[in-house]
Image (cartoon, rainbow, N blue to C red; front, side, top):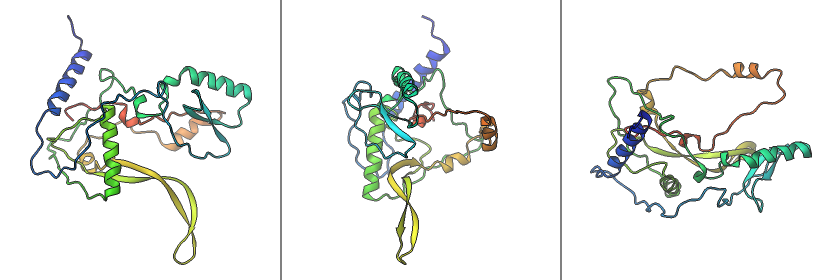
Length: 249
């Protein structure tokens, strides 16, 4: 049986993943206990719609639903005519498989189509950074996110990486409100709506080869929009989880 290059790449990636998952942990690390990944398969939203908390919207927008019993919500323009809204919903319902409401909806990109490779400058030295201390609340945020990634198959355990970058938690900020400070002065304040788990890759970025296709300047993008009544944009759900990274990285 003939195996093409794409299939070879996938088989090689699977072999590397299997090898890395069975290596022994490094000594000297201070590891916190982590619950075992769930054995229950998370179903896509089309089969089992998730229960989500919907945030208030500005007056020009509104929620509509693609599923039964007010499930699978999307946000549309509130001033569409009845015919326009009906046509839009018909298209959205037809292609709702392309929309993500939960991490289980992520199909990802096949490694045979695209796989990100981290290219490093010559003469670089790997850096193992210690984890910064997190308070118990932030530890719980990180723990839940890591378990969610493990359950979804987005990450896998590894303990012998030559590069280690610290995890940190940053607030998700929503709208702005006005509060009084200790001097009874009104000051604007951003509302924290949740927490986002991030990884500090600054040390790795310093020795990573830079891409030669920079994003266009904002004035170039605005110039292309001139004279057009409508424009569309895509907000990829968990976009950084869509493209696989080469297992050796």
